[in-house]
Length: 330
Image (tube, rainbow, N blue to C red; front, side, top):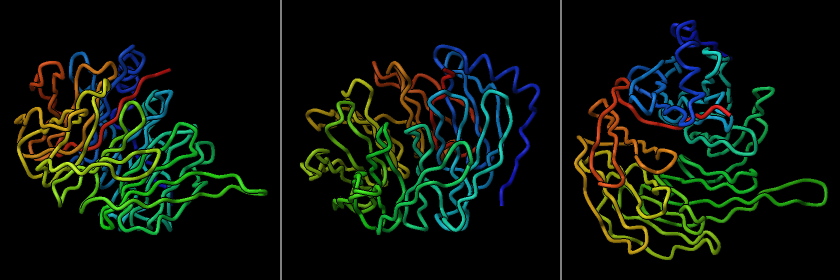
């Protein structure tokens, strides 16, 4: 069943949102799990310019490359829900949601090869959606438990999934057979509670944050082997993101007050920055000057100055902020 959700104050939103999206810097998109909304934030003023309803239990958001559309995963604990909300960012209205049934538990999102990609945790798969029809056009089973987050290469021919309960990373590569295409899979064991991860800016390493072990696994992307396990003391780690210059790895902890910053080259801890009572989503600003960290228990987004490694400001986007992305109209 497809559900069309009315957009809040659509007329006012169209006027307010368009200048934010057409600005050179673009707009920050932030989900509020408590309010079930997507907030659009002007990165210059740090003010919310508009909000849109996105359905139950929103966890992750991804914007299209042209900045015109956003997709939001309705997680439902990994099993009870089966939709992805769709927002038209330019015209200021919600579009019919994408019904993934019988797939359930949409969570991780990516945009590549001109289409949105997703994980369906409860079904142990990843897949993609045809933007024209709004229908699922690719489904690939992982054979792993709690397939949660993913990364997709720009051409859509390489996919990486993080499988929390299996404590593994899966590398998928599309191969062309004589009369069809198929996927090869390489499964790499990492630490318990593997979840947050990022690909280094040079594309050589994949760093995986292991929440239960409090470690970080470093994987060589070419050989698909773990080259180091960092004893980083990051129990309850939720997300890991590299700064755009590749200098630091930034880690958020769900159950601790600090943002942990590691040197990406020496692997040494640089700083533990107090930001609240716990944190989840991390988004780097284009240009690399700031990081935005969703402090879920504190109901704000912390703005981090990456030059001084200090908290520069806070943004009120609604209760329990989490997933974030950047939208720039092209």
